[in-house]
Image (cartoon, rainbow, N blue to C red; front, side, top):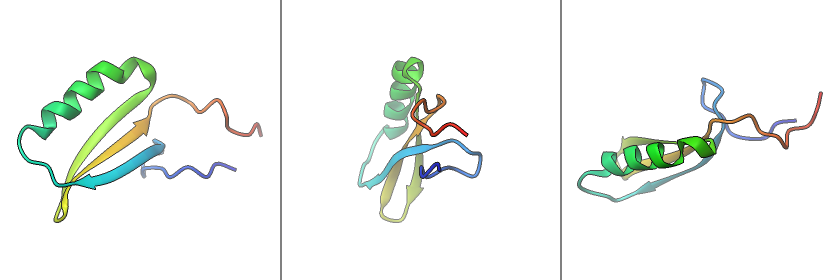
Length: 68
């Protein structure tokens, strides 16, 4: 059974957290996406009343999933 949280699109979410950040936060997300794309990671950002939520996604198939 796959217990990972997923986006409606089916992409697994590894972690998400809201921070109080200002400035060019989108540049940080772009940098992380470019630098870590080859490692199967993708980063997303969304604005919330409490701050900016940074979400880390897995873009590779999870090799540790149970075989069906």
